[in-house]
Amino acid sequence: MPTKTPIPVARAQRSIAANLSLARRQQRITVDLLAERAGISVPTLRRLLNDGEGSLETYLRVCRILGLLDGAVAASDPLNTAIGRIRADEDTPLRVRR
Image (cartoon, rainbow, N blue to C red; front, side, top):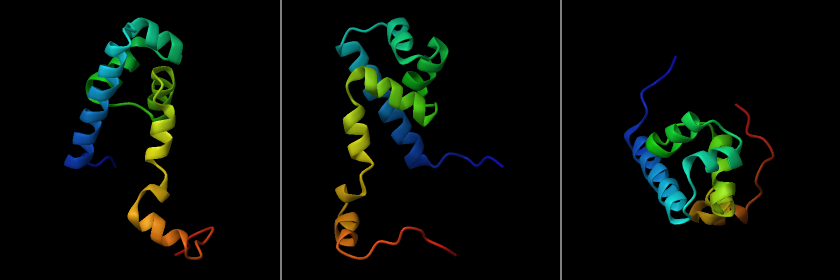
């Protein structure tokens, strides 16, 4: 059952959409060309650029074309967080079980 998107997540979606849109415009790439290079449809790209809605794969495809892929990957690195750096010194389990 779908739940309502939390406000911080919706805010992040809008910010990411604005960032991607700005990067596209700064590089002077048309929506049609970006969609073609990313291998996605124009409506899918517009949904991502306007509302921040889409799959993770779509986001990463667009980031790759705009030269932002390495930054997107780095943003998800747990060692870039305080708790991640602290836990790196401990024995991290391969799996967490109930």
